[in-house]
Length: 212
Image 1: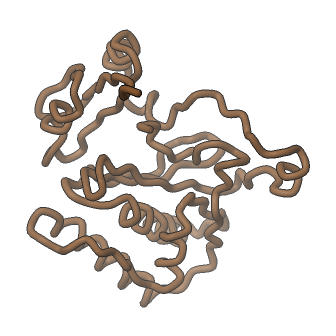
Image 2: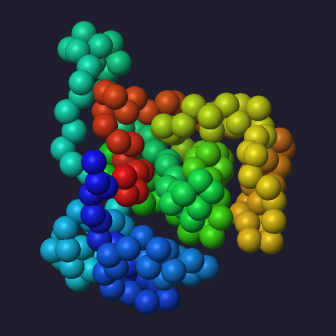
């Protein structure tokens, strides 16, 4: 079965506009600090988005209907809205990566980093959690953090970023953040609880970039 065609809107990049090929979109956002882009299924949707605001489109997904049974849903319950949600997006593995944190209830963006020219989704998820921990500690907030990455949760517990991505000149800036995150975990205490987001019950995490 042929892959469904996508259209890529670039709000901020070396060139802005709508691109029909991922490589053309990638060329516009590569090495561009603060690039803003998203894929759409139709040209009309991409054109409408280009005339609008990037932040009104990221994290937007189709209506979700869980495949779990009523008993399973009741057992899981509803998400705690007194929380923030974090997520990462990587176009390739490794590839262009960014991460962010949002208020779970309102989806208001609280922080965002990237895009970085070379990273992995796991690194982004790890950095997002640590950024969230530092953010909530600074705010003296009792909110919890939701993440959909068990791998990143494990790395945070172990206070290490166990990535296999080789360090090089292309990703040096990213690894500087990784070093800072690991040091923060080693030399700081926190009471924030990090909880797994139940995607099968609740749909995509609110911090999702909506590029799937």
